[in-house]
Image 1 (cartoon, one colour):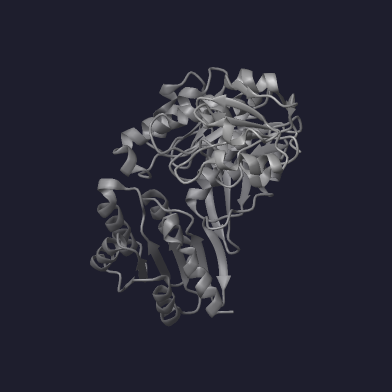
Image 2 (cartoon, rainbow, N blue to C red):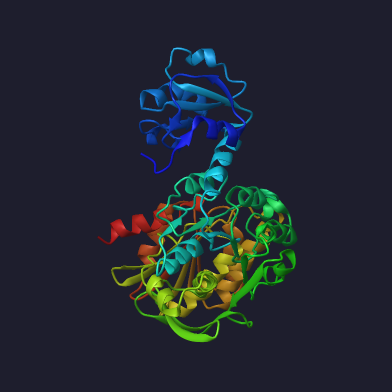
Length: 463
């Protein structure tokens, strides 16, 4: 059973619902949109998407214990007249779900930290939750449920046991971050960076920055915005808000600044950092400069929330990297870096630069297509090939259609061995033939390319 209850009156007030059918319910013990998660006494919200319609599952919801359902006004309730369940009708069931989450969030006078950015959102969210756990009990977004459905789901998990909430916010267009902040009403906003992710949808870096800037605009005067001092777009977003700005970075002065950064052998990074008026040593259970930035953002949140350096260190020590995000693996005599969860030009360049820092011998890039880049897709893929040559990558293996530009550019840039593969299996065959002892292999590509499957196939070969 959920840790919260809504009365019928509260639901109607929060959503402007019209009561269409009343059985005996007066209190709902939790809210869900998923019939697989229904418990006795819950309120079921029938969401409608492109490939599904929750209205088709109302009978199933009632059978599993739901005692109420929110439906769209145009739904024919005669289809379920024999089912013993309260029916409330609204203009938009998704909006009703969001309104209930907003209603519930307002009951808790706790810090709500919202995180957005082109790259590093999920890792920063997890790092922030870990840092804050050094002092507080933290609710955080699970996985990367960062959209108009995932955010309400997280907020509805709030109860009196939590001291702080950390929520991730994604976007695919202008106005979407504002929509999410209107639901969550964050007291603190974190903006990690602005990159070419979603260029296809937004058309320019300026528009992407404008979309991310909606986070800064949402934070009220008594709140905090956490900004990347080294990002040319993010560093200027203090102009968008009356909230107090806290800066993090490596190259520019800020409230939180890292220096003396070192990669150690067991997939960890050590660095010193200025934290306010103190200097402290931190160990991060990940590799990569981009992850140091993510960690600095988390430390900035800890600093804003009043944690001591010791509490931050304690919390950070509990952090465990999420799979497929610069995940270091040892296989036979080789080193694998699985960074295949997703890819953008910014994150791929960062991953390549970090490959050169951690590889002790040969460097190999296994690259899949990067999606949603619109008019810059050819140049973006070419740039990766050119960078591979500049950084001295020994072998480039590509998989996809857009990566043909990466392969061509890599050859021009002097990469001696370049292989274009038509399948994951072909990429594995190339690796089996070319791998040498102590090679380090980076796997990178957009989520839809499933580059991690190459690792899975490779692991079977070296059992």
